[in-house]
Length: 218
Ligand code: 5RP
Image (cartoon, rainbow, N blue to C red; front, top):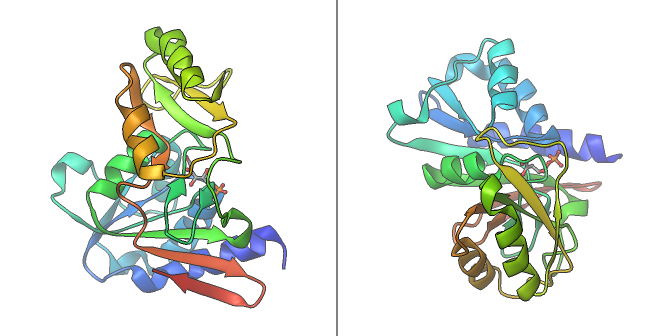
């Protein structure tokens, strides 16, 4: 099975977590796109969705799936999204697609966070994938200097602006041994909007695509 087939497998498996008559959160990226395409088959079962990016909102709408403003919704039954890296403790790095801020907001509003990922995303220690950090543009250099003090090597994602009008610093060379501590520490740097670590609010369930089938970790 190739990587796309493994992603499709977990995207299909995530349909099990869609509760009838509820509003669900939908993530961003190639795995989330496969989930959106699968969701289209059962769209009559749900009341609507909240999307974590403009790109996902457009894809949902193209299938005729209702997309709601998060401010008009009090709670989401589940949030389904991919990840760039995950540990077996379900701590994640996200933001490879640059949607980390809205992803974190939608995850925070959801009763359950189901992460869907192929087996290549499972790691012992987070940090081989450069950690995305969304930053207010005028604070870019200041934040970068603080990240260097923490041992990181930040790199501006060139030619990219987030849906919120900000920039992304991708931070290399971090061995993230304590993801909760690092999420807190980086989050406190003035000018940082969001750290792409999902450890304070990790996933609740991980559906991991393997050649032997979908493994469920929780
Ligand atoms: C987007 C994300 C994605 O979930 C992450 O980049 C994984 O993407 P893919 O499913 O394409 O591998 O965090 O901001």
